[in-house]
Length: 331
Image 1 (spheres, rainbow, N blue to C red):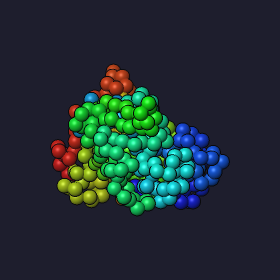
Image 2 (spheres, helix red, strand yellow):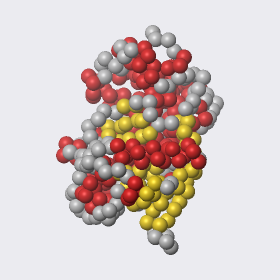
Image 3 (cartoon, rainbow, N blue to C red):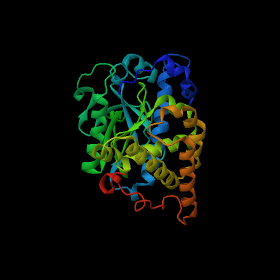
Image 4 (tube, helix red, strand yellow):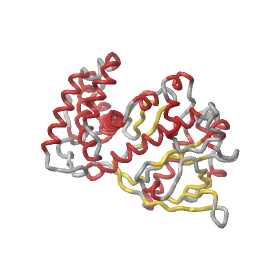
């Protein structure tokens, strides 16, 4: 992911999040470091929300995978890698750092901290084995995430090496927990919010503007697309506006149950429609129902959740929402 941040993003309030970031910066008053801290804050927010949703709903997902709630950051993926190193307060030879740690995750329980230089993943020595990369490219970032996922799938745990310890290197072994399989990314290069079956990408400006409940609904909506394999279904049945609207309705409805299991307020979906989608409705005319229709459908689903005797973590939506790519017929 090319993580170059432009002035337009800063003008939209991303700097207001910078103080929430735990990342070590070379100078808290340095304006050059502030955008990096802002992105780190958004990364942490998304990883925490995504982890909470994916972990709470794992018992009901068809496709689960072990995860530890960790986002590693290839500093070369920034357009100005040296400036990024200065902002994060790491040495010139540092290639990879802990980018974000989801609250309550195995990575958090292991004591990992944002900004820590990471030297090894299993037997992969990052300072030596990483291939060269041009600034602003994302291939190494994907490689790093693949290394972690592969170790977790093979062993059930991943070993990470950091500076420190009696022999100059400290190792920690972190065991994964099953989650609904998806990666979570903040798009800092202007890409739109999307779910592609494997990843959930949340556009940075949008993430910066939403408070907790609407933001959680947005993430849950995108996670619902991946859980229900909507991209595969649309590939099979064409992306006409009727089919796309069908998948969007399904994602809105399932998002309510995902939120309830994770202990979030599903009313955040109604607020998102009223306070955010309403002002941008022209962007969604051909692919989504009107904002008030979506809000009404969300309220109806909230009423069904409220009528259930289940508690958070117990709402079994699996029979109500089967994977449409496997079972549905286009309407």
